[in-house]
Length: 176
Image 1 (cartoon, helix red, strand yellow):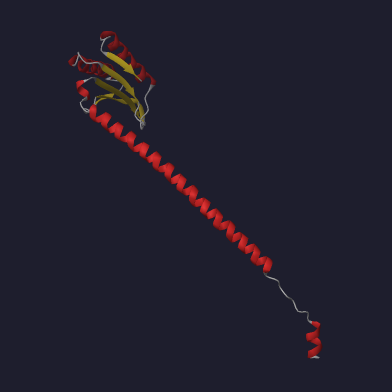
Image 2 (image 1 turned 180 degrees about the vertical axis):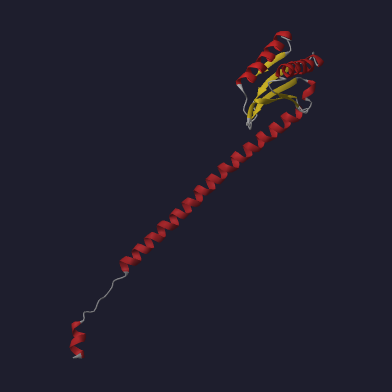
């Protein structure tokens, strides 16, 4: 009975040649793509190095430019005025004045003292301009990143700037 069983089982022969052909073709494709990927990576690296070199040249140019203007106070006055209000109470606001790189002067405004404070702000800016009457003054309205400016404060500051431009037409330039 064993003999008849072995005669009934067909022998399967698996031909692995096509499988090996496919594996070798895939291996060749992967190796070919690997070298192409390496070439692309090298090209991108070279481009990145060119961009880096260009950026370094620009940074060096900016550094030399800023070093040349290290004594900015000798050439002109930049008077930056910024305003912000307290988030919990819009009636209480802070107006800041900064001349070039000097310390900021802050004025606290509220409904009771705002008229007097606006007058002091005007006088302070005017005093700065007249102290260096021979130098141009650039008046800049600036909104700080973390603060919001009320429209009425912006309008009041611009009225001050316009008045100073009228009073000192040769020396004052206004920037927003």
